[in-house]
Figure 1 (cartoon, rainbow, N blue to C red):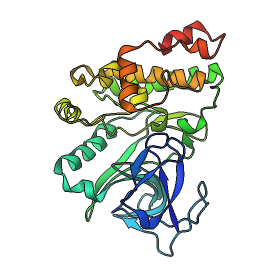
Figure 2: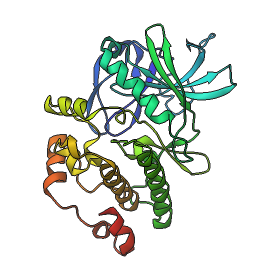
Figure 3: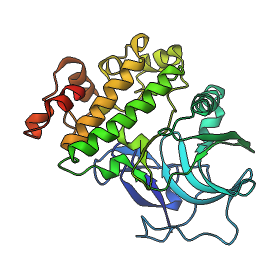
Figure 4: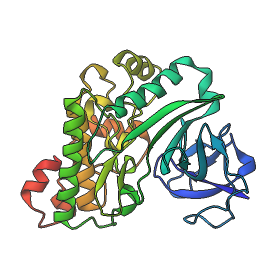
Length: 304
């Protein structure tokens, strides 16, 4: 039997043996090394069945009142499941903090602050948060379950039709503008943190870094931790200048997203995170029109 896991670097979903929980594996696509989740419920899925619903046990695993139906993805801090709320009769996305992370009160506090940051946001292009709590040793956040996939999985290799890219960029800007007016800075805007619903509308999610204080970010940055996703970082994030991270940082990341929507690639080539962050701080990105000739100059100006 195997479980579904998602590479935190390139978001590839693949199968891994369920007996390997806690071990480090390498992504077949980008070669990134990351740990498999452990200490949270995992549901069996037949080998090779990635993309299909897993075979459920007779009695679904429950977390608090939520009935866990399917593992949607895993990362370094936790896993996300499709679950059912029998009290309100609706499906939810259940984000669960990894058990080993709960040993740190600071990590638990930050996890719950994420829920508080997102819960005060009510916007058509932001995934709604319904609930947060603790069941035994398991901490969770319940949010709206959006049928569809991530924007990361919807970007063609050569980029989207410019009008569609502009439409999505406008929706993202609307979501970020609303969050910023309510005092919330996302800090990790990227296609993998954006969902497209069945109508093709954009929904921003995962405000995990929004609940971090400047002092926490500064301390972890000095310790060598990377706060965010290097390919989408603003220069102040890449340089560790936490005092200047703010709404403009999110807008820079949104520009990188638009660049990728238009060209199918990011401004700087993939590579070691440290090298990538150096380029972001010290080099000018090639205009997207170099990769897509004839691109509207107005769209190019927004990217840069």
